[in-house]
Length: 234
Image 1 (cartoon, rainbow, N blue to C red):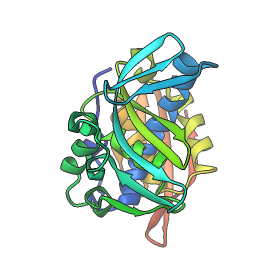
Image 2: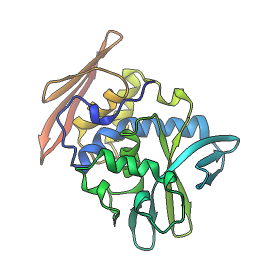
Image 3: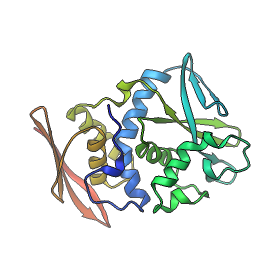
C-alpha cells in the first residue's frame, strides 16, 4: 500500500497541536503495531545494532533509525536529533530529524528534551513520527537499564500496511477509544485516511463507503474535543 501521511488528512486540524496529531495517527499506528507483533515479532527476542541501523527479531532483520529515548531517572524524553553526546552517526537519527522538519509548528517536535506524562510518552511520540513518515513504517521500544530507546523500522512485510475492511476498522476503533485519550473525530478521520478510504466530513459526522457498505461516526463536541456518540455500519 502506498504511504499515506496523516498530514494530508482532509479534515480541519491544527498542525501545531500535539493531541490533534496524536489523534490522527493513533488508529492506523495501533492497528499496524499489532500486526507487526503477530507477523514479525511473535515470541522472538530482539537485538538492535544502532550504528549499523539494523534490528533483528529472531531471523527477521530490518533497517531501523532512532526516534528518541525515555529516561526512567529523570522521567524525560530526548529526541534523537538532540542527543549530541551519544557518539552515534547522525544518519542514525534520520527519523527524528524528519519529524522535526515536517512539524515545525508543534512545540513537542522542536524541543529536544521535555518531561513525560500520560499523553507525552515514547509510544505516542513514535506513533506520530510514523504517521508523518514518507515510508510505511512501524516502531519498536527497546528497553535498557535506566530507560528505553525507540526505533523506527522500515522494510516490513507489506501486509502489515494493507487496507482493512470497514468492519475491522470499526472494531479496532471501538477498542481504541475505550482506553486511549484522543479526539474521536480526528481518530476516525486519520484511521480512514491512512487506510485508503475516502470519507465525507459533515462536521458532526464522518461517513465512508466501501464495497457497498457505509460506516458512519456521529459526534458531539465537549471541552474542545469531539466524542463519538454513535457508530453504524450498513
